[in-house]
Each structure stands twice: as C-alpha cells, then as structure tokens.
Image 1 (cartoon, one colour):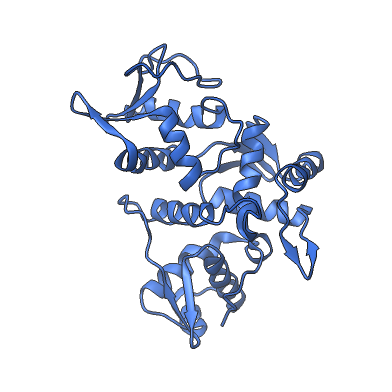
Image 2: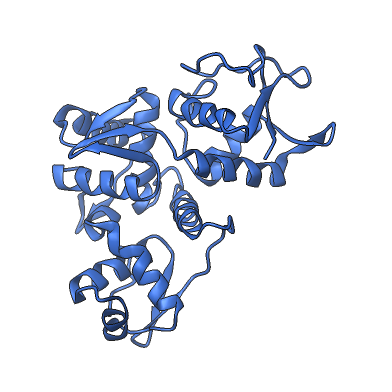
Length: 282
C-alpha cells in the first residue's frame, strides 16, 4: 500500500503508462495492490508507481489498505481526455503563490517553455533544463524541498516530466528525446467549452467567449500562463489553428475589446483580422 503523503511528483512518476490502467482497475472494484496486479497483469512495481502517481495527481485515495478513486471532474465522452483534463486541473489547483505548492513543477516547466517560445525541445538539453530551474528558483521563488534541501530539476526529473507531459497531452514525442510543444487541440476545445460555461455568453445564437477572458480562465484552472503573457502564445495559437481547420471554432471580432495578437498563427478564413473572441461552432 502506498503512502498518500506529499512526495515529489517527478520522483514518483518515472513512467506514466500504468496510471490510467491502475485508475480503471480500482474503478472496477479492485481496491488492493494484489487485486490490481491480478486484474491488470502489471507488475507489483508498476502498480505501486501507478497508485502513488495517481495520489500525487489527486485521482486516488487510500485508507485502511484499500484504494478508492476520485471521480473525473470532466465528462467529454472520451475517458482519456477526461483523465488528462482532470489531472491537469488538479495540478493547476496546486499553484498557490508565493510558495506555489510542491507539485507546481509540472505546470511551471511548461510555463517556461511558453514564456521562452519553445516550439520544440530535447529533454536532454542541459542548458534549457538549467535555465528552466533557475527561472523557477530565482524569479518565481519556487522551492520544493526534501529534508530541508531544495529539489533541483536534474536530468532524470526532466525526462520524467517530459514523459508525463506527453501522457497528459501537452508534448508530442517524435524522436527518443525530441518533442513538439503544444496542447492537444481536443484538450483546448473542451477547455473553451468549460470556460464558456463559466464566463461566456451567447451572440446570435452562438456560444462566444472573449479571448482574454478565456486565457484568464485557462491560466487559473488548467494550464498556467506566465504573468507577462501578451496575447495568445504560439503553442496555443497552434492548437486554435487546428480547431479552426476542424471547424470547431471561429475567431471573430465581437464588441469593442480590441484585437488580440495570435503569435505565429497563419491567416485563416475562419479568423477575422481583428479577432478578439472565440465562437464555438461544434
């Protein structure tokens, strides 16, 4: 049985592949380590890692040697998306400046890539890793600790982060250590709908949310954006562009809020020149 204490996420989850199988097994009624091993065919070590990882992600509880799942907070019709969105939401809830929260490393690493406009990364790039860690330590004053010492972002932790960020839909691996950096468009599509439910409106029968309102909601609830983010960062522009290609959204000028900059976004017939709002079309 795992310890539900506040272990450090990037130490706990080295390989995320067992996370969802363990969650689904517990949800089927297998509540002990041995039952999960028998149900899934995973090794005892993989089950232990998966259960600990799920607890760090806020998806699993343990009491009296038995596990219980926490329900997904999203219902998209796709259980993989529900898992990803719920995990991202739980991790975002740990972002509590000024101390940030122990698991904030997950979102802060991604925020650094947004801030520095990385479209691709190599998780073995020592310079990027050290600059990322230095920004978190010196600028954000993020100090996760173990036995009184700060936990630094070493090479193993960086690789673990890359695997988890891929598993949760924020990176896309194309070679062993090479990744493209952008959120899965389906994650963004459902986040737009959730944000609209919270803070949007209807215009001419269509669900609409202002881009700046959406960015605020996204940063507070799902995907942290650096405070100095101006307009839509390039990695998010890429996801929105794909959603326009799939005819799931339009970017329109509605009202007098002023145009929003969409970094590196090519022209598109579903994007108006002075767009400031997202129109949900499917």
